[in-house]
Length: 195
Image (cartoon, rainbow, N blue to C red; front, side):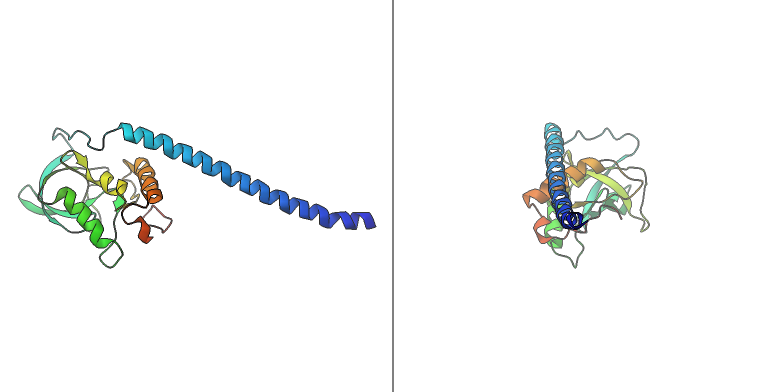
């Protein structure tokens, strides 16, 4: 019985030590798998051009002129003779009182200010504020994607709109790892991609 009492603390120590080793190994494997997945997706995305062909004006596509850049993810356009507010899909940028607001707004303006843009819907037409929800193309560039890739926007899933969501997640991770755009401020570090 005395030998068993001496062995129990030793056995407990071994179990704790083994668990720590197993945990470290699991973390290393997860990191390696994650890096490989990111690398494969980045390779696939790199093979696809950032400037997708602009559509042909068929159903679900509208052409409008940008009249005002509100912030990094919202613009006003002239659409069918009326001023219309557009909220970009699958992404979010800092608000007026947050770090990197000005930089994200300027990055958006650089891509769209004064231009004719193509607006492409996903599943929902408008949000609860009456803004049209769209993917925005300017000069053949998908602006939503470019802002995420450059680090000025974080990926956000607003169900049921989910086109490009998984692609944008990979782009955001790469921008964060590279310290691009707003990422160094920590503004996107809330741990959530849902709203």
